[in-house]
Image 1 (cartoon, rainbow, N blue to C red):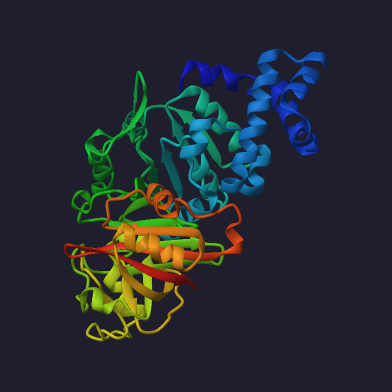
Image 2 (tube, one colour):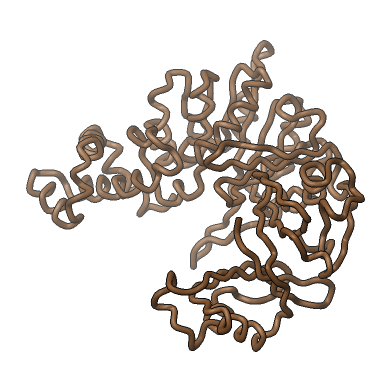
Length: 430
């Protein structure tokens, strides 16, 4: 953590600052008062500038954090970077249940950050040790875990902590890790994609797994299939339409009949698609080319795509187990995620559209179509086509009146590549 962030947080790590934060948050009046006016009022009441600045920052961060933490924010403090990287409690709850099913006696959260996963684990009465190398972050985590007497925070390097704290023979210990995947440079931070450059590296995770521990490790959703250990279950998780992480599960936390999985969480709950086969082992389905672009077009959830489960989804949920039934399910191109079906199937694993018309991907043709159909609102989706939807929208809508978007037609275009050809499929959302 930078010295600037530490100094900004210091003001609420005091009894006075934390009490003021909770009082203002509970009253809620700060929401209707301009920040400058509130700061001046607090300074007039005798609060130090450092305390006022820290409290105002925390009020802003708590407001942002409600989407991830719900009512738990009432007793939490955050950093901007920590909040961005923190696991949503909806997702963390699924992590915690894995450890509960594994029957562990305690979980060590290595590199806990602000303690989101430790909070979820402690919330189901599993003792948890949150290990964090940054002292200021650890202080914040201590506050965030205060409601749970069986949760404790220790300041240490993750790898060193494991070396210094062997588990008692009678204790079944689980580990949760969220390795740092960014490097700080003079101009900011950059994402790291090489697993051995993570902190701690993936090899450290594998060593813990080889020792037989119940283990889960959170990684980025772009995780390459070829770096996933053969001994792990790989699970991609999407939250409200965005793929937020890939998790590797080992030993007691993994399922014996699952190699890869897509967990989809939305307002309606959670649903999971799984496969016991390895990557590349999904069933083959009919591939028809553009002639198959009839009926309904489906875009799989990003977690399904990342897990390589597109054709598994088709066979299980559309084709009733018959991988040869082209009417029930067909790909237009085996390298593109979109697929089509003659029938509409409602599923949490894909978004369906009714196909209206198939057009060649030509600017002149599309501009003419938009003009003839009096389009004032245009949505563009794409796969396999190297184009910016925003720039293309401006090009296609140039010269058309869009100041009253509800007055005209709403058009959705799906741009896709099939072989070497490119198409624009006109669809209607369902």
